[in-house]
Length: 162
Image (cartoon, rainbow, N blue to C red; front, side, top):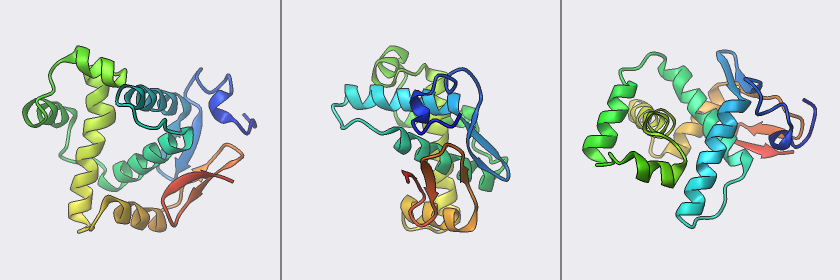
């Protein structure tokens, strides 16, 4: 996979190809595609500007950092489901599917669970904002972006084109 346009590479949807890695694991192309597709559906349904593949990968890289710092946290998929149902009052799978392209389980694991973990870590680190927290995490930990043409910017905690 040496294509500079990794998102359109035909191998990238066919398996668990590593796309961005730390010393504790990798984000895969299949996860990236699923996340990116959900963001596209959401942007279209809410009439927002369309996200770039790099923005979707940035989100997954940041989630990866949070997961590795927290390890086995007390926040579970059950916690995410309860938060969605009790706090957000979002119980209608059809509406969530229309807005995101995700079923309830995927929505809980890909949207709600990372949100809760990020907030837990931000509070633990006494961070002013999520952006500041991500910048601190990026400065403290290495990430490698494997496709040529993309880099991890440690100062902004973002995946960018070279």
